[in-house]
Length: 459
Ligand SMILES: Cc1cc2nc3c(=O)[nH]c(=O)nc-3n(C[C@H](O)[C@H](O)[C@H](O)COP(=O)(O)OP(=O)(O)OC[C@H]3O[C@@H](n4cnc5c(N)ncnc54)[C@H](O)[C@@H]3O)c2cc1C
Image (cartoon, rainbow, N blue to C red; front, side, top):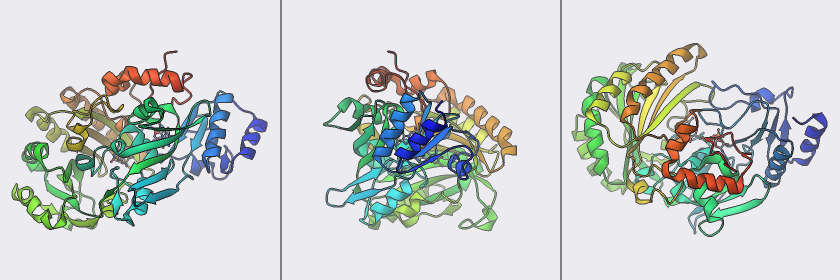
């Protein structure tokens, strides 16, 4: 552990800030998105630029500190922070440069997706990301990246052209299809295991106005909705994305009063084909058991991307469980109905995100993200503002997960996992795990970067 003098030396070398226990901003800066996580790092290096990141990585290694890297701080298990160690906090590094001619964006490692959508929308462009705009580009991208554009454009990593990184030994490298190819393969799904990504180069697509929003059905219709949805989404045009959700209707606009606080099921749609064909495309959807509430219509892309931000502000208590799913059998649907009708709190939910379409066109071995043949990424989240309800949200999430796990594909999306042990990490990477270990041995043999879904080196 570094003493005061050594910490002062680090402070002197940074353009950004060094925050320590006792500093007035310590309790604000150490907070992460999940209010259930309460860690107390020894040092927080709020890096202003790549030079600061190199300094911080070298400092962490030389002083044998536990090192955590923070992007957006959204990780469910709190993997953007740690107790007693050094947090390399990228949240001041938020620059973005859009190249409209090349249709790319160069995005700094601490950006959120809201930053990216804001910058690219001005040019009528977008790239696949997640469904909450305060989520970090760093963690979401390095784990894969699933969202509203997945079926059409693939995972976020399928739109990643290169990364700039600081490695465990302090070297700065670029990884792409041409340079450091093994590293580029590994960072596309392998999380923060291989170094600190200081910038991402992302491919952009002409997407400006979606035809999007939620449709809700009564909870009693869940079986019918799920059976229809599993058939529909398997063959739907790739211009349509739709994720299934259980919810308790929030008591406020835009929801009509008679639905407030009702348990319901829904699908959040995003159509990005020609707008003049949207109504026609949605006819079969609307024909199937008309929804009780239909909020689907033209929407600027960033409005969809931030639709759930107000419902999920930072600081709520979150407990996560997840799996990949190949098939939604009748038996699995019966269990979903059982646990969906027991939603413990207004913010709790279960989502089924489709990962077919464009995701399936990339081979299982082409990137570290291994579940290319799954149909959905399932996530069960127990969420509430009040820590007094933690017992309820945790037990509901665990019981729901345990009941459905036998119907899953085995592993889970790393970005939806908490700390679930090494066997789960191995199951998630499947046949790609051994190659990831080889690359970890090459680039981080001492496991400096281990506050993540860890690929353990074997040297
Ligand atoms: C409300 C909410 C909504 C979500 N929605 C989606 C969604 O729609 N789709 C989806 O795919 N995921 C979603 N997620 C999951 C999300 O992808 C993960 O929580 C992810 O880890 C968040 O990344 P972050 O940078 O914000 O997190 P952090 O907690 O900062 O970091 C998470 C992990 O990534 C590493 N990391 C972060 N940035 C870097 C970097 N620049 N270089 C190296 N390592 C880095 C960290 O070390 C850590 O191990 C959601 C999460 C929340 C809380």
